[in-house]
Amino acid sequence: MVKKMESNIVDDSNEISSCIATIYIDNSKWTNFLNTSANKGKRKKFKTSFDDFISSELQKQGVLCWLKHTYNWFNKCTEYFWRGKFRCISKNCPIIYNCVIKQNNELGVKVEVDWENLLVSHIKLKKAVRCVGETRKM
Image (cartoon, rainbow, N blue to C red):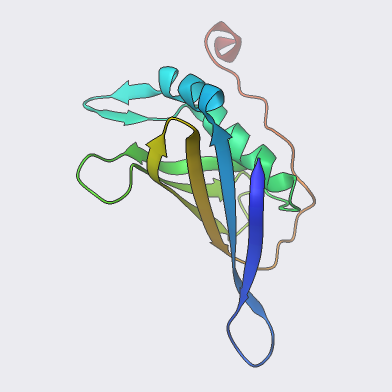
Protein backbone atom coordinates (compact mmCIF):
# COMPACT_ATOMS: atom_id res chain seq x y z
CA MET A 1 0.00 0.00 0.00
CA VAL A 2 1.31 3.45 -0.90
CA LYS A 3 1.08 5.55 2.23
CA LYS A 4 2.71 8.73 1.04
CA MET A 5 3.37 10.39 -2.29
CA GLU A 6 4.79 13.86 -2.53
CA SER A 7 6.38 16.20 -5.03
CA ASN A 8 9.32 18.50 -4.49
CA ILE A 9 9.27 22.00 -6.00
CA VAL A 10 12.76 23.20 -6.79
CA ASP A 11 12.68 26.40 -8.77
CA ASP A 12 10.82 29.70 -9.22
CA SER A 13 8.79 28.43 -12.18
CA ASN A 14 6.94 26.04 -9.82
CA GLU A 15 7.82 23.10 -12.03
CA ILE A 16 7.89 19.81 -10.16
CA SER A 17 11.26 18.18 -10.65
CA SER A 18 11.00 15.02 -8.57
CA CYS A 19 8.46 12.79 -6.89
CA ILE A 20 8.76 10.48 -3.91
CA ALA A 21 6.50 7.61 -2.86
CA THR A 22 6.74 5.32 0.13
CA ILE A 23 5.26 1.84 -0.24
CA TYR A 24 4.65 -0.25 2.87
CA ILE A 25 4.68 -4.04 2.44
CA ASP A 26 3.19 -6.11 5.24
CA ASN A 27 5.14 -9.02 6.67
CA SER A 28 3.20 -11.83 4.96
CA LYS A 29 3.57 -10.31 1.48
CA TRP A 30 7.20 -9.45 2.23
CA THR A 31 7.94 -13.04 3.31
CA ASN A 32 6.39 -14.27 0.06
CA PHE A 33 8.60 -11.93 -2.01
CA LEU A 34 11.69 -13.10 -0.09
CA ASN A 35 10.81 -16.78 -0.45
CA THR A 36 10.34 -16.45 -4.20
CA SER A 37 13.42 -14.28 -4.82
CA ALA A 38 16.07 -15.58 -7.21
CA ASN A 39 19.72 -16.26 -6.50
CA LYS A 40 21.91 -15.37 -9.44
CA GLY A 41 25.41 -16.47 -8.58
CA LYS A 42 25.96 -15.34 -5.01
CA ARG A 43 23.62 -12.34 -5.18
CA LYS A 44 19.92 -12.38 -4.46
CA LYS A 45 17.30 -10.41 -6.40
CA PHE A 46 13.53 -10.12 -6.68
CA LYS A 47 11.62 -11.83 -9.46
CA THR A 48 9.28 -9.93 -11.79
CA SER A 49 6.32 -10.31 -9.43
CA PHE A 50 7.96 -7.57 -7.33
CA ASP A 51 8.11 -5.30 -10.42
CA ASP A 52 4.38 -5.89 -10.91
CA PHE A 53 3.65 -5.11 -7.26
CA ILE A 54 5.61 -1.82 -7.34
CA SER A 55 3.95 -0.84 -10.64
CA SER A 56 0.46 -1.59 -9.34
CA GLU A 57 0.98 0.36 -6.11
CA LEU A 58 2.38 3.40 -7.95
CA GLN A 59 -0.44 3.34 -10.52
CA LYS A 60 -2.96 3.54 -7.67
CA GLN A 61 -1.42 6.96 -6.97
CA GLY A 62 -1.62 8.20 -10.57
CA VAL A 63 1.67 7.02 -12.12
CA LEU A 64 1.06 6.09 -15.77
CA CYS A 65 4.07 3.79 -16.26
CA TRP A 66 4.27 0.02 -15.84
CA LEU A 67 7.75 -0.85 -14.62
CA LYS A 68 10.43 -3.44 -15.25
CA HIS A 69 13.70 -3.57 -13.33
CA THR A 70 17.04 -2.69 -14.84
CA TYR A 71 18.87 -3.16 -11.53
CA ASN A 72 17.66 -5.24 -8.61
CA TRP A 73 20.01 -6.57 -5.92
CA PHE A 74 20.12 -7.25 -2.21
CA ASN A 75 23.15 -5.67 -0.53
CA LYS A 76 25.24 -6.98 2.32
CA CYS A 77 27.70 -4.18 3.05
CA THR A 78 25.83 -0.92 2.48
CA GLU A 79 23.25 1.16 4.29
CA TYR A 80 20.57 -0.23 1.96
CA PHE A 81 19.11 -3.71 2.43
CA TRP A 82 17.99 -3.73 -1.21
CA ARG A 83 18.33 -1.37 -4.15
CA GLY A 84 16.54 -1.31 -7.48
CA LYS A 85 16.22 0.78 -10.58
CA PHE A 86 13.17 0.58 -12.83
CA ARG A 87 12.15 1.86 -16.25
CA CYS A 88 8.80 2.06 -17.94
CA ILE A 89 7.94 -0.74 -20.39
CA SER A 90 7.30 2.00 -22.99
CA LYS A 91 10.61 2.38 -24.85
CA ASN A 92 10.01 6.11 -25.37
CA CYS A 93 9.38 6.95 -21.71
CA PRO A 94 12.40 8.76 -20.19
CA ILE A 95 11.57 8.24 -16.51
CA ILE A 96 13.87 6.19 -14.27
CA TYR A 97 12.51 5.06 -10.89
CA ASN A 98 15.02 4.52 -8.05
CA CYS A 99 13.93 2.30 -5.17
CA VAL A 100 15.55 1.43 -1.85
CA ILE A 101 14.73 -0.65 1.19
CA LYS A 102 16.88 0.50 4.09
CA GLN A 103 15.88 -2.22 6.52
CA ASN A 104 13.32 -4.91 7.12
CA ASN A 105 11.66 -5.80 10.42
CA GLU A 106 9.00 -8.14 11.78
CA LEU A 107 6.19 -5.80 10.67
CA GLY A 108 7.29 -5.65 7.05
CA VAL A 109 9.26 -3.13 5.02
CA LYS A 110 9.16 0.37 3.64
CA VAL A 111 10.14 0.82 -0.03
CA GLU A 112 11.16 4.36 -0.92
CA VAL A 113 10.71 5.27 -4.59
CA ASP A 114 11.88 8.49 -6.25
CA TRP A 115 11.80 9.65 -9.84
CA GLU A 116 12.04 12.77 -11.96
CA ASN A 117 8.66 14.12 -12.90
CA LEU A 118 9.22 14.32 -16.65
CA LEU A 119 6.49 14.64 -19.25
CA VAL A 120 4.98 11.27 -20.11
CA SER A 121 3.68 10.89 -23.65
CA HIS A 122 1.81 7.62 -23.12
CA ILE A 123 -1.49 6.60 -21.59
CA LYS A 124 -1.72 4.50 -18.42
CA LEU A 125 0.03 1.24 -19.25
CA LYS A 126 -1.09 -2.18 -18.12
CA LYS A 127 0.89 -5.25 -17.15
CA ALA A 128 2.68 -6.81 -20.11
CA VAL A 129 2.00 -10.48 -20.79
CA ARG A 130 5.21 -12.42 -20.32
CA CYS A 131 5.85 -15.55 -22.36
CA VAL A 132 8.15 -18.13 -20.80
CA GLY A 133 8.95 -21.81 -21.19
CA GLU A 134 7.11 -23.82 -23.84
CA THR A 135 4.79 -20.90 -24.71
CA ARG A 136 7.79 -18.79 -25.71
CA LYS A 137 9.14 -21.50 -28.04
CA MET A 138 5.95 -21.50 -30.11
